[in-house]
Image (tube, rainbow, N blue to C red):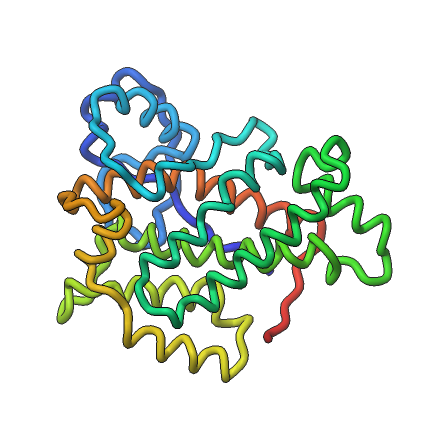
Amino acid sequence: MQALSAGPCVIPHLFERTQSDIGFVGASPPLSQGKSSGFLPDRRACSVLLRYYAPTHDWKMSLLLDNQFKELPQDNSVDTKLFLDAVSHLPAFIDCLGSKVFSVIKSDITGNITKIRGVYVKDPQRYVTLQHILEAERDEHPSEWPKVGATLALMWLKRGLRFIQILLQSIADGEKDENNPNLIKVNITKAYEGALKRYHGWLVQKIFTAALLAAPYRSNFFKALSKGEEVKEEECLANVRHFLVNFTATVDAIYDMYTNLNAELDYSV
């Protein structure tokens, strides 16, 4: 399966300050398909930019920033321990969506993290990166792989992570329902259709349709992301964009790994 392109980080209001100091590489438009304007740096440049800018920015309490994903090395390998440490805090993000109907996604993410960790702790020195796990299971279970063990768990987990990434990127890009601008239904729908819908059967899709009816107000969602604090929308969006830099790069790297190893499966549940 061809991985979705998550697009670059877009932080227009920082460019005037940093463009003369940091070299950028041009990148393709984000998921908003060109709605954002201005100079578009690649993700590694964004990471440099945010480190440059962070000392002067007052980052408020944020559920997303408490446990950020680390910047990937040049080879885009994903350190297993660092990944598990960061991703283990993401199920709490699903609670920000309000409705208990979304607990299906939360449970799926939690269960797959547990399966991957169960493999990793058996031999941490052998499974330094996620690719080490996939390659080891391929060698140990040639007839069953990739529909086995942590390989299968990570395949489904990355789809849940892509759901979160598309949702946050859509919100960061300013995509709204013109008739209901304070709802995030359009953002959740885009995330579901882009990351999960094709892998779900009729029943699960109906459950998600019901969940959309309980989608939270945009203002309530931002308050939940800010741990109950009253935070200005732009401040919350700045936190989201900051989080997305390394998170998006990590999700992209996992999708690329599955493509390169021919480990992707296309079936519905």
